[in-house]
Amino acid sequence: MSLRLLRPALVALGVTLALGPGARGEDPKAPAPAATPAAPSPGSGSPGAQAAPQDSETINKIMQDNEAMLTGRGFTYDPAGRRDPFRSLVDAANTVGKGPRPRGIAGMLISEVDLVGIVQKGKGAIAFFNGSDNKGYFLKVGDALYDGKIIRIDRKTGTVVFRQDINDPRSIKPYRDVTKKLTPAEEGSL
Image: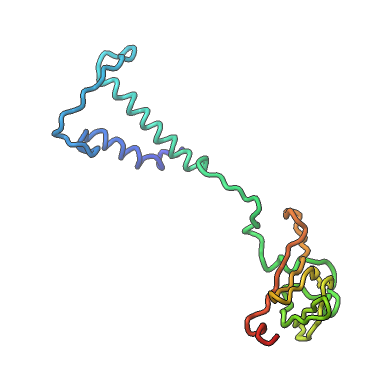
């Protein structure tokens, strides 16, 4: 522990003890409370010697608290379930797959397609997407993109749910569910 860091606290404590009751917020004119007789410490014959151990205990307590604060023993951080704050969010999308991407919708990432509409076809629904190549694609449940596949299409809520594959050995699940919604302007045109 550096004495330079503790010096201000020790100076303040010394000034407070030296100035007496007025510096501690007590009324200096008020009579001092009756002290209970304490057992004299061995080897000390004067009552002034008893104040020194109490002051040194206070100083030691302050020093221990400051040391605990500076070494970080008073706070612990649990990073479980949180993403790494030093890992780039931009690079995460680029490291999904290895090798060249196929052409068309099969080579597009989930983040690269926009939901334009949902059409009811018999008992199932088909979602209409605009790809990053400015072409339209009709997809149904089970169709795959480069980093995931469609697991649910709901026409009533205007949502399509993808199961996105994650190549991160630190994550608990190897996938993440991503929901794309129709915007209010697109919902009115259904």
